[in-house]
Length: 319
Image (cartoon, rainbow, N blue to C red):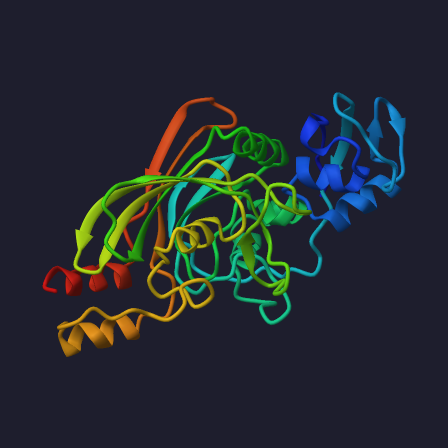
């Protein structure tokens, strides 16, 4: 199968001026791992102002970086006949409703049974796409809507739209505590300074801190809990979970950022068991709006709230 190629360009912003080329590219081309970008720099696929540079060379504001993307076959990822809940499909994109418990990318401990394995079976040409066409991801225990590209041009277009904040992603989240009003969290996120498996809100000048903005509004109030509509302006790892915990309204069932589950006084034994038994974050991606990469038509889809969250909300109704 012939591989597709495409040229991507970006201008070095002031926020990263004077940093290493590979660091800046990791910031500008987030869809690719830093290791892969370093490989491409070494292979001569990257130029700065039409000159080849080394990964360690510093780049400065206003300089143009050009990257020639030639998708590498993901030979280590095997296609698997895993059913997909498809909301929309055409020649360029696939919109799916990801179930709870499905990992998006193969990784140590999750070499099979992932969304990428399913995509490689459903869309064989995805073997020539970065991350099998996945444009953005959801955590294993977060359910809901995702868009996947079926061609390299669609993938690059969607990634660029995502970085330009032209793709709208909306979630519902059940959080601990009774909110009185909606708001916005504008706080940079990066790797936790001690526990590298976690993310955390950092100082904007900390190494690895990335701008992150989350908007939220109240959908429904319950005693001791609040159901929120959440809209991402940026797309950092664990962003909603980290931001909600940061403002002291952690997502119900979040094992990493939620802390100890607070049980309201005078609740029924049935509700107590339901809350304590909810072992994943009560977070669902329910709406996606984007401009189609080929037709340029504005399109929007919704994924019904996952059944386990719906059942928990029914329990809260009678609290």
